[in-house]
Length: 413
Image (cartoon, rainbow, N blue to C red; front, side, top):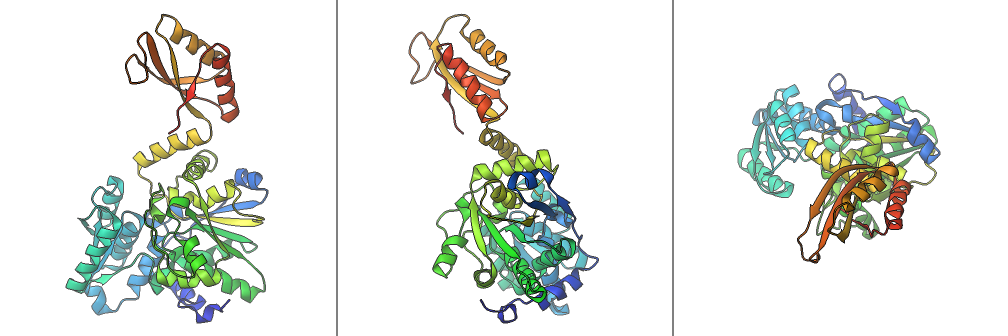
């Protein structure tokens, strides 16, 4: 493994970034999670970047990049493209530095993210149907106008700025053994690994740094295996903050040398982690910020010891939160939908309702239909939505229905 001095970003770069950020960003708190600690048999704390200015860690790298510009470059303004956190980070940093910012966001971007970016004073241009199209347009504008393009992760100053989180964690949790965070393009993971690995070397100890990706947007495992950038053909995940189909060249060159592992988690695991953070930690966290918690809950990290999980952002669209909560409840067995085909005669629905009530489940919705491709004349299809207490309780309810002669079919979403 090469030393950090030979990498494109060094510990000195991160220390300089920390000096630039002094008094500008929030030194976010560390919160212990007793519930997750018991679950994994370790000592778990959260680094709460969901409480950062503009709602995520992105303001760190954006500010360092823009504060490092010359007076001439600042006068030209900056341009960026993003569907959320990077947009808000750039807009917030630009406002603090008095720099004009233009942000390209894709059509259909979540309204709360659009409004928040505009509230920071940036000019927002809606363009394209995805972030890649918005990025291409932002680059064209930069080339034509001379505005400085602020890349979300493939830049030395941006990586150094994100790495300041690592320095803060070491100051707040000196005996940390493992640090876990989500990874998309790789700026956060690269920056933190530079800070942590060099400081650990100076202290004569080992600290593991582990990245986590959504399994349907995991470009790093194949890229690390091939020792070359391997772009994904398709990216599909609720964790839009890390939905990046191709690693950044600069972060990749650091991550392949310093990071101990990059693991993946499923969409259901993400949903369960979000529910856990809401219920047990009282934390509003976006899916991309919850991947580290999901990895711990799924047992993807062996022997974590004292572990710090970076909750990288809290900018979640309420409509997405609604869908994620529902999926999380399904995944945890606390929400159950069953379809039952039965004779169309009086009393059948009442019998089903009685069985459900007797077994302490709660009906939240009923659909009753007599027509459809699989429904015979004289039959009726009943679809029932239930609140239950978990997988075991769901099975108890299903067995009770079967014992009464019904044949419930579990509907999966």
